[in-house]
Amino acid sequence: MARHNKKLLIFLTIIFLPSCILGSPDWLKINGIAPCWPVVWLLPFSLNNNRWNSSIAAILLGIFLDSFTISDATYIPSLLFLTILWNRYGFHNKKIDSFFSVGLMSMLGTALVGISIWIQKIIFYSTLRNNWFHSWSIYVLISEILITGLVAPFFSSWLLISYKKN
Image (cartoon, rainbow, N blue to C red; front, side):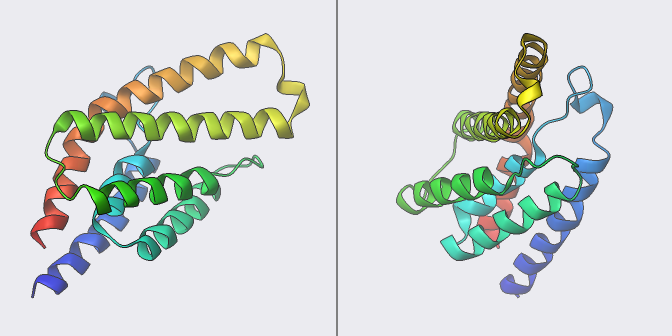
C-alpha cells in the first residue's frame, strides 16, 4: 500500500510541476520572475531516491524545460550535477529537518542553474557580451534565487516529508 501511495505522490507532483512552471501565481513572483520550480521539486526527489532514478528524473526534467525555450542553452547539465550532489548529500545525511537547510540548498541550486544558463548564453551568442545584457541578467538571477529561497522551504519540505512517510 505504501508503494502505491508513493507512486501516486510522484505522479501528482509530476502533473503539478508543469502547471507551476506554466502558470505560476502572481503572488509567488518578484516583479514577474517566478521561482525555479525544477529545483524545488528536484531537491526532495534527489534526497530520497537512488542515484539512477534521480538522474533520469533530472534528464527528463531538463528535456521538458528545454522544450519551452528557443535558445541553445540547456538545463540538463546543471540539473544533473545538482541531482548527483544532492543525492550524495542525502545518502550521507539521512536527517534533514531544518527549513533553513532546505532553503539554502535550493538557493544554491537555483544559483547554479541560473549561472549555467547565463554562461551558456554568453558562449553561444557573442552579441550578448555587452553591459546591458549582464545588468538585467544579474537582476533576474538574484530575484530568482531570492524567491526560490523563500518558496522552497515550504514546498520542498512538504514533499520531503511526504516522500519519507510513503
